[in-house]
Image (cartoon, rainbow, N blue to C red; front, top):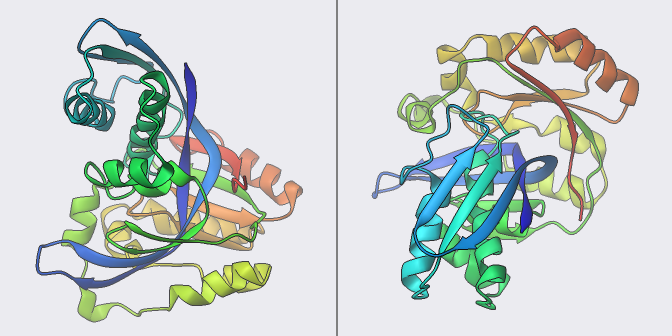
Length: 281
């Protein structure tokens, strides 16, 4: 069967505090976008086989799809295996949840292929055991997210915007970004303000509340992030922000001419340049 694994952006990301278990409590506004990986999944006699058009993605037990498939085989005593082929369109180490989206897609595919009849809640709980962003990627709906990424409050109001994604070649390790974050220097904005703006269809309110605590440490590692953000504003985008821990930057606009002009400007200058939209289902 064929399944699409949709990427996400963080319209807002606030690292609230460090927890005793070493993780961080977060507050975020996460939105799915139309950029996606295309995954083909088939049942085979045994084992887990992963192939891809990507030369950088691991295809062994390090891969999040492998971890998810292994967990489901063991949890539900599945006798047969699966074969996966993924056409990667979402770049790695970009802050776009490419790995988590793929993992969520495999949970959905195996649920269907093996007739497990799992609910969305059950699939999300299963995904949480493997990765914090997988529950969001199961639902593929704009949400106010808390905790390490497992507490989701869905925002029912559609948010319509075009996005231009621009990523420098160098990616950012999430672990490194958090390790270099100095919480004593962080200015915290309340992500609920953006939630209200989306619910009130206040586009300017969304733009005014774009924020990402992890931009500071990521920019220190990759100065191009700051440069791309500034160039996007100069080109007429209403706002620009780094997604997740980076290194992908997105520009927001409701004007297709600005989107096209930005695409033409950045195309060929950076490793990854792509036009996309917020996914509203």
